[in-house]
Amino acid sequence: MRVLVGDIGGTKTALGLAETDGGSVRLSETRRYPSRISASLEGIIQDYLHETGARCRFAALAVAGPVYDRRCEATNLPWVLDAESLEQDLGLTCVELINDLEAVAWGIPLLHTEDLFELYAGDSLSQGNACVIAAGTGLGQAGLFWDGLRHHPFASEGGHTDFAPTDDLEFAILTYLKGRFGRVSWERVVSGPGIVNLFDFFCFHHGVQVPDWLQAISKEGGDMAAAIAQAAVEERCPLCRETMNLFMRLYGREAGNTALKYMALGGVYLGGGIVLKNLECLRRGAFLEGFFDKGRMGSLMRRMPVRVILQPDISLFGAARFMALQ
Image 1 (cartoon, rainbow, N blue to C red):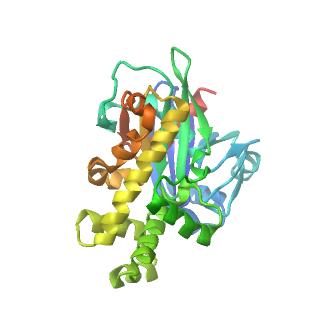
Image 2 (cartoon, rainbow, N blue to C red; image 1 turned 90 degrees about the vertical axis):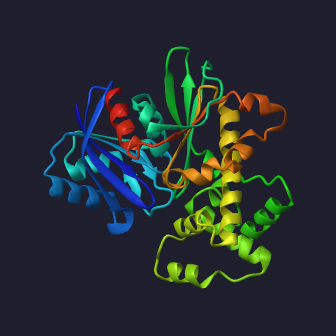
Image 3 (cartoon, rainbow, N blue to C red; image 1 turned 180 degrees about the vertical axis):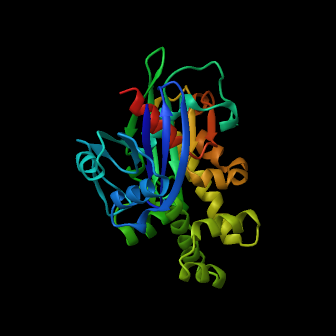
């Protein structure tokens, strides 16, 4: 089965061609485009088909947003995607829309040993539900229900649940962000924009100005979150280091929250570009401190393996597998 597969995020859109029988997926002709390069997804797909000369009848598109009734209002893009309209506009027989983190969950059985980094081994004999959480432009989450024989992926919008502070500093962060956004979700602190929000808070909290070098990056339209993370790794900016330490602790806390809700004894999988670019920061301990900090449930948390997904095209693989098994 040949499938046009896509991963449509708030920052970039990845497209590729997949050959699959459900048990295996071969991916080719992958391309990445800035998501806002076009007023619609149709325009990006048409460019891709023209560039590659690709021909296929089916498409499976992983989208960062809730999918229902074959439609999706993208969370961090001004797009409304409709499968029926995409079929008509692109001349395709069948288009399936799937939440991007659900697509990641569908792709997990296709991963090899080299596609995973084990952050924490947990109990290797445990079986049960699993979960996926990924911080990027937003904060995606999905679950995998274990029926005793296999996992069944399902979508979630858990990243938009209320941020819950646990100490005076976090209460101060909540107050600061409520002044800016009104309601504060976990995505406001655990995401790429969340890194910038935390950095802005620390500048306010300590009564200092944003450094000139970071202001220059902002004015040039650069990636401030990446710049903050890099400065933290290089230990050339105390505020950046403080920001990333807290970011990783909060990321671990919310990953632990998700794992508890899904009883994820089968494993917790971390996806998204932020962990891939900050593995060293992830390994320093703040993430796992936040993950394990669950009071009476601490011993349960230590049974759950925590693994980082290293395969950058996991959503494309998962979208292909989803389509093949429908």
